Length: 147
Length: 300
Image (cartoon, rainbow over all chains, first blue to last red; front, side, top):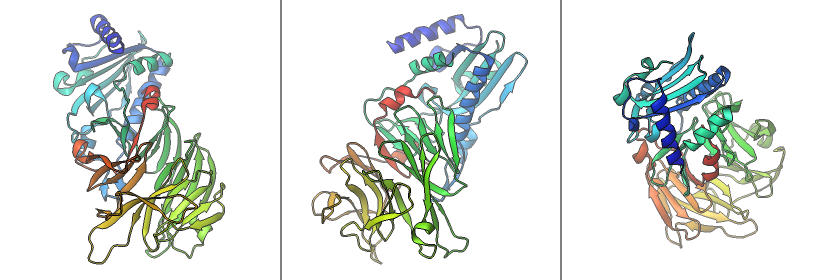
């Protein structure tokens, strides 16, 4: 039932949205869109950024005498800065993701793919759009997004 | 408005968990050993209200169910570990600070915080044992009566009062004189379960280990793994033990993870988590927990 509802919701988003071009096939990307005030959107974006930044915090483990994360993992998970522009607030990161674009993955993990993770807030329409898509399918989609 | 976002994200959650989830430090894996999520930190506890207690390199944090940091406690870069109380309402933190010179005694700081991040009580090993005595505390936990205990390597178990200010009593687990005891856990009935590592002989590479259970008032401890009176199993350096509702989970970075049924004492599952998801670094400890309630509230 939930899946059915979700499919319908995504379908309606994709059919109405003017936010993303070009459109890759639906299975290869994920879109969320919600109406929020600017303050709420900023809280949500910074929360997500902070959580991911803390997730990939590197430190030395005296027990194993190694670092927590491999270099490939740190280099492959590039957490971008939040950019506040005249019409939009944009946060774009390149992250290794698992199935369903879950974050917190590394290249060592079986089945992980490098993906674009974009949160775009349109000040005029008050819509926060989150787009996840693998780099292989979409490339750097942050430059394709517009309000 | 945020509520509707959270409701939507909840609907979009890809998780459905009936079986126990594997917790490998701050990574969650399903029963097929597939990585589900990674949380910040090197040690995490997942609470039924959808929040997470996470120990990072120098801070202990609590994350709310929306991924926000609810509070953080600075641990001044000391090597620390934490344990949850039985009722999951307090966080017990043990931090160690090495002396300035190599043979200086280490000082262990014991602190108890409530779930709002406020310190309830604290003490340190110098105040408990004196600064001359060199102790190595491996475990800090809570007894079934609500007092606290510490386990001192090559020494004894000490029961402390609720303010951590006084040693109320001490005892040794039977048959552990001059042996190593670590990873002491308290069961629902008040018994202690621990890893018992007899002293290694000089020509012995591997330490023989057994999981034992001691109920206060009894004369003998009971060996619960391996079953029967046979030899102990071998680990290069001992591994770690966690206690879940139905199983003992014994983990070692080199040997893998054994899930031993609490009912039968037999190995019901074995896996090498590091080979499945992460070839870079195996987990320090692995535990099992039913996280159905946690996932129903975690909305991030």
